[in-house]
Image (cartoon, rainbow, N blue to C red; front, top):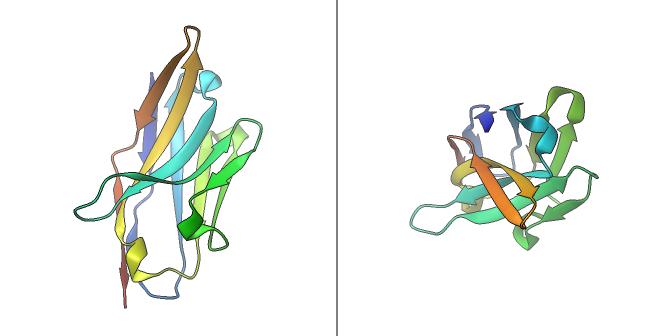
Length: 120
């Protein structure tokens, strides 16, 4: 089992910046990738950014050039630096950890979610 604890989000004006963090605990040695998803009001959850254990990153087109995902392996923590925020970035942001097991089987673990609101 993996437990994920996210930092608080917040309210920020358009053009501003915010950094989210997510600390993993439990069976962290098996984590293959961590990332951030978001769910805007009335919409489905979508991938924002992800980073693998080999530090390969992947971003949604809508955040490329504005958001940066990094990780600190020693702290089992992943960060999402969000710059040039737009009102459309308003959403509940969820931390995600993925473990691939033999089978193959994929196990997803989720944080509790944190609200990010960008005002225009």
